Image 1 (spheres, helix red, strand yellow):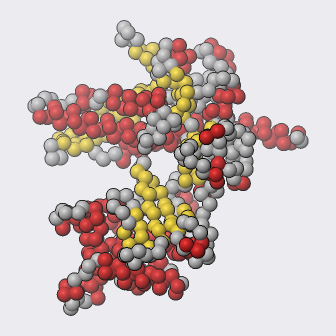
Image 2 (cartoon, rainbow, N blue to C red):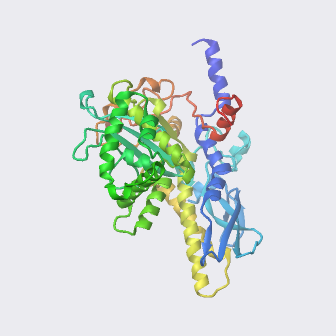
Length: 514
């Protein structure tokens, strides 16, 4: 290897550590994402909105431990290992309980502990020199990036998943079968909604394009959903999907069959103007969805429930308000044209194993999921405690209503056992200390969520797009082969960017109109 190449490698490792992806992600979680989760959590209201709980800033203190005599002392990782303690930070949140018309001052309330990643910003070891690390009983060569829970070192492994909020086109069976589907996993604030649009030969219904999304049993015709979203005229539905005549004929057939499925009353439609007819069709489409999601309920409730499901569970990453329905309809129309192009062999389906279509979720992302669920549990418990105090006529106190064990135990239990939210197991593992190289390897591990009992030949294969990102050599033998991987030595995971910043840059280039 040339001298200049060695210099490049040295420069890379001067800037980045082998576990930088975990530490940077965890720092972002602590410094930004915890506050964001608290800010978007629905406010607590009690006794028909007579009382409301207001939250403010979150404060995170460096690790300390309470001794038997009540005194507090700083705790370092070496002591946590020896005494089988948790190396965790203490979280305080500004809160105020207000009655109607009141505006009480915010007070800092202790809400629980957060397991702390070694060498992160709020770790005692961050910024210490080699001599200071040795004095604290730490190995200067230890890069951190793991947690200490009950005295055990636990590593959170990187999880591989299909890219969210991106349309993935798949072909079902052979080309001659003319069956395909477009899938998008829409994620907003931790909620994952899988939307699947499928093209298949019609059975009894005679509909080619059918769509499924959460909280709607089975599949519904795409045309009915587009009507419910605001595409009321036949022309609007057809032209929004494609300008290709062959595709338009498929949609026209679907429109004809879908109108039969709506069971429209000819008597009610007689004498209606064009605008009134369109409004009638949109209402009929919403009723059709309402009959699926709230069968047997009153008509008013069915319509309200259908609108709530469309707003909250159909492509939530686009938005969850009424004014986003047209944008969702346009998105689905684009998705439909892409699917029809696959059917007619004008577009190739996506390769799910291509690394463009994958995302790696590191410590900060996984801790964010965990904290969101734990904080929701805490707010529910607080609501229960405060309502119980009101029913017993006691004086309300926020500090007494907050049981810090709820948050602490939820997070600690997940890291200690590896059983994460969403039913995933093995997310956190006992850190491999067989050798120094074994430890580094463990901290750079990437795990696929696919089941080990199935062959998944293509997923296990080494894909050309993994070059420079995934080590081609280091993977276990047996059922985990190709599903448990390791990052290449000079691979560095980017953290993503704020979408609003990107929009501002695009607007400044006059690509989008204001």
